[in-house]
Length: 552
Image 1: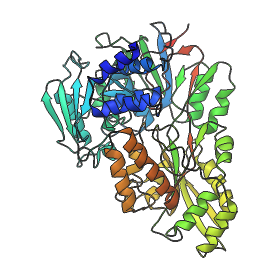
Image 2: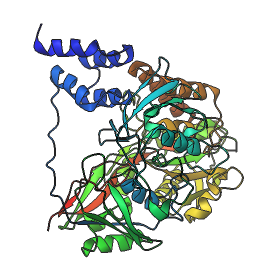
Image 3: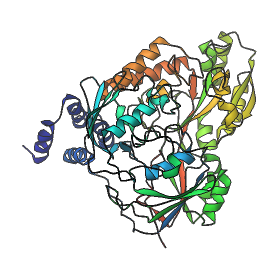
């Protein structure tokens, strides 16, 4: 028996049926190295172990990046945090960029969407994915000297899943994990007993769910006083609306951070952040919008990290209000859009084309054989005639003033004119647009026609549920379809790739037909850094700065 077959055969004997099905997919050539590593990591298999199997098959490992030099200060320019910093409730980039430096997750996503263990060493599901068991890392201490144990994990997720609290993570955990569902087995083992089986649950307790940093069981809501966590940096100082600084944690359980110190400066708008980067006052920014990218793309002192993202803009049409009660009208609006102008013009080529479902090209299970919807004015006009709207209609599109969205709204307005749809624009500040983010008190959720920004996720679960299932808390389209709800349930509980791909394909086809929401493009994430900086990981979740160095 050839050596590589012996390696694979030995590995198979240690794995269960689900994990072995991924090896079957790899050997049959139906998935490549990246998808194999991603799928295996969901089940808690180590990346070195998975990489060894992939290498044995003949799929070599990518080259490792050179490590930077230790020492010095890394200066970052970020948005002003949106209020008191509390990981249970925060939702803004300025807040969670700070928390990422001092607090940690059970696992984090990598650039290839694999999961890397952090405070969890491993995890595995039961047979149907309704219970996930996590083995926790031993020897980890919080900055205050307390030991990290299962009690801290239980308390963290009970806070986040409490329906009577103000947790921002309820958008992830509603219908997935209830308060009391996280249970201690021993000091270094916890079980998550889910409300429904879920085949990709570990992403819900990873950096993908930015509220899910592990806090001490004793946490009382005073996070910004200490930034208590287990992470590679400790708080040095924090001044609201001004900035924060952190220093290397000498007692960190893992590889010590390269920088001696991090310095964060807060800015109220993106333009001052860019000016600070150009002037050399900061070394790195959090992600910038596409519409200002040209300012830095041509600067010889700055490089822009482009990260393929699943972030997108959802253009919703209320399915319970005329004329959008007729799916032919919704289809007509989708067909009037020239997506190439959005990708190549509005996004300057830094985006992937959308096909009117949340399944972005970056997701491994996306069925790329589903025909891409393209502009077809003749067909769109036929659909309008069939719906009794040959003379068009008048409608207001309500959206928010953010990044490329106003430009998208204007382009959509022009596209819609070609089929007689007379669209007026109501572009609001973010606070007014989102309102209280509940039905009846939110222009976002109540408007007949609107465009909303959705941030990156490594799996499509939240995109499939919150804005599209019948009882979804973000269902701005007021879309109610029992078949869709059933398909999403099937997708979420699927553990094997075949079942996931089949459900994904069926969902894509159903949404193309129903078109409650238009997904035109998925813009890349753009992270500008000065060329003296190295080691910023190209992940869409946010800035992780412990392996960053700045050349003198």
